[in-house]
Length: 490
Image 1 (spheres, rainbow, N blue to C red):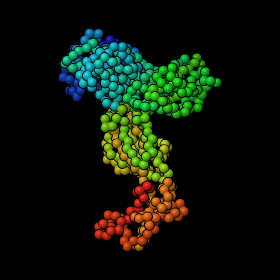
Image 2 (image 1 turned 90 degrees about the vertical axis):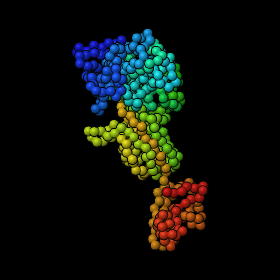
Image 3 (image 1 turned 60 degrees about the vertical axis):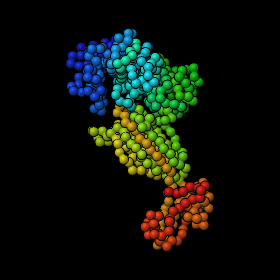
Image 4 (image 1 turned 180 degrees about the vertical axis):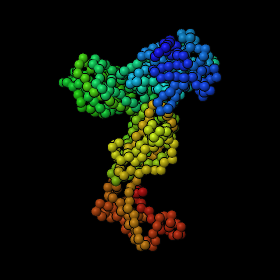
C-alpha cells in the first residue's frame, strides 16, 4: 500500500495524486460529469474488460472512497447526527481476489418513501452504476439484510435530497473466505481454496434466500471430494431445508460421490461445510438457482424471457430453459427481442454475456447458436424433440435481455408430380392420433399407415402451394389438416 492511509471511519483511502485500493491505482478524471453533480469530485477506478467504475466524492464532506482492509466500518456523514442535505457518497469495498465481502448494518434511519425516491442507500454486487449488479435500494427505518458479494468487490451508494434529514446508517464489512448470505437468482459456491485442498478446522455456512427470488431453490454439485468416513463424521457438507440448522436436514455428504440434485421446499436453503483437524480434499463446487432462472417447458407452444425482462437482467447468472416435447416433434424458436452485452473488442466473440441454444436436453448436444449484443435473429429449429437454452452473464454490464416464443412443429415429407400429391409423416410424430383423424381436406382423404409413416396420396389437376394456387385463380388448396381433436402438422 506504500504511503496509502485508510480511514476506516470515513472509508477514504488517501494517496498523493489520487486514491488507491487493493493495489489498483485510482486517478482523478478530468472533465467527467456523467454521474457526479457539479460540486462532487469524480474519480475513476479501472476494472476488468476495459470497464471503469466512477466514484463521486464530495470535497467538503468526508464520505465515500475505497475500503481495502480485510474488515472495517463506515457510516453516513455526521453519524449519529443527521446527515447533510444534497449529498452523494460511494464506498467501494475491495478485498483480496478469491474472497467475498460480507456486509451488515447496525443502524439504519433514512427518509421514507414507498419507492425510495428521496433519500436512499443502494448496495451493488460489484461495481456501482450497473443495474445488473444492484442488490437492492433501501430507505426508511428497516435495515437492509446482510449481504455477501459474488466476488471481491462490493459498492454502497448513499444519496440525500434537499429535504428531511435523518440519522443515517452505520455499516460493517469483512472479508469472508467462505460462507455468507446469498440472495441472487443464481450463483456459485465453492469450498475454501477450491480447487486446492481446503483448510483444516473450517466451518462455513451459506444461507441462500431472502432476495428477489421466489419458490423452491435447486442446488447442483458439479464437483465433490471431501474426506470420507462412516457416517460422514469427519469432514462433511450438510444441507438444511431452511435458513438455519434447526430446519429439516436434507442430507449429509462426504467422500468423492457427488450429492444428488437437491430442491428445497421453501425459498431458503442452508449449506454447512465442516472439516476436522487433518486429512482434507479438493472440496466442492456447486451452483444454485431459483425457478425463474431454471424452467422446463412441455407445452407445444410457449414464451420465455430473461429474468426481470424488460428491465436489466442480474449479473452472475447461469440460467437454463429446457423445452421437452413428445417424440416426433421439432422445436422452432422465434426471437422477439434480444439485447445482451456486446461482443469482445479483442476477439469479436460473445465472450461476456451470451445466450446459447443446444439440440437436446444438455449442453453436450449440438450447438445451434450462440448470440450476444443487439441483433435481429432468424428462427432456429431443433433436430430432436428437446432443446436447451442457456443464458450466461458475467460481473458487469447488464442489458435488457431477451424475449422468445417457441412452437412444436411436425416434420413432413411432401412431394408431387403433375398429377399426384404425396404427404408422408412419421408415425411417432402423431403417435397419439388415430389414423382416421389424419386427413387432407376432408375425412374421405384419410391417411394410410405404411411402415412407420402416415401416408396420404391424392390426385390433383395442378400442384403448388396455397398462395400459388390463389394466383392461378383455382380453388385447389394443398393443406394437410387433422380433425378438431387432433393436431395440425406444420
